[in-house]
Image (tube, rainbow, N blue to C red; front, side):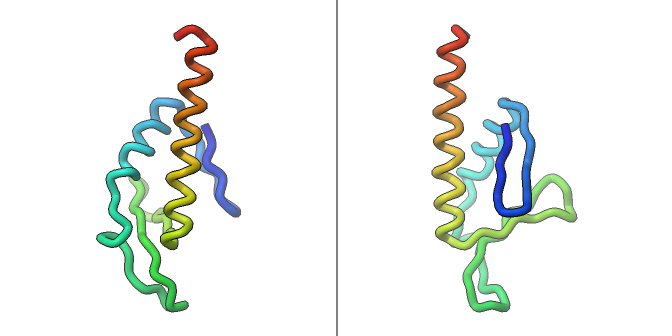
Length: 84
């Protein structure tokens, strides 16, 4: 599984992807966001690598979750097609 956004690609096994999605679903935009120097409110999501953090505007955060939801749905479809 890959997540591609602008110049960043993240790679996951199906289990890692599901765990990452479950983790991100629990994050509240309002509780983790603050204004950036450009005046835009952005959420900061920490990663297991201390030096890497992701930032999302509210619209980007919603799009991110919609895309991950679609990917989870497709994982289920592929699983059914393979008879798992």
